[in-house]
Image 1: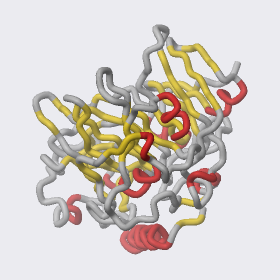
Image 2: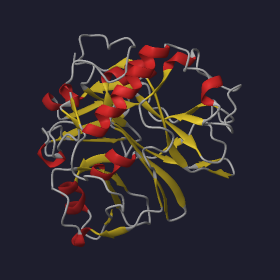
Image 3: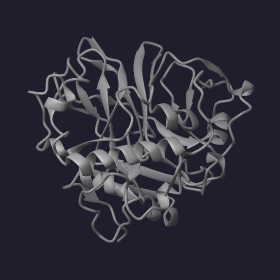
Length: 328
């Protein structure tokens, strides 16, 4: 894997901390200086050493709030093959959240109609999930903690500074330990697909931060032999750790199977695959990435179903008893 200069510095810092201090820094006594409002007495994490620094500090990767949008017709910077997260809520104008921006910010706090959402993307797990930000009567907003667990982003909410596991949408440290966010039925597709289906739609405008948007700081990452800062068990059945799988609940379908069977009906869902979407984690320019295709997951009535297209190692780490939907 070739990382950009800032990412190399973050990686070097994280590895240096791990080597120099072992588990000494993986405990609340060290973290409380940065996290004085987090209740570390409440946690579902069995061993604090599971949580590592990814390099950046709290908010070192800046989440976005109340982003600006422009019409599909006015967007000229995004390549047709570039991935976007499509959010289509009934009665509202469809919105696209480009991965070229989420790669550098990882979380977007937004409101669509009367639905407050957190659109999230963890590059190290390829996990792109949209959550409802409401928990009971409480409205949360999310930031990037700078921590990783099983190489997956640990988010935090600004209201209680509880820590949340992005790949599963569950609180793991603090007041909201055990609380589950509601995942919305959104999906990742190419910009070309989104604008063809939604010519009157909206797309998130380029943020006002100085970032090389459109570049991938994790060059060739999805061709790596092992995940970044991950020491857990590798997937079974000879599946490559960074192979993509479609997770629906606690079941996972290898995307490689969908390439040979472009439509699969199993477990009460219909999965489809279409070519044309570039990987965000391959070439230096995202638009030039290898074709990983677009996945849609629907139920028998045709309604979209919440799902995630994540790396196999992450599915196995967070769903060790999950079901692998392999070819017969």
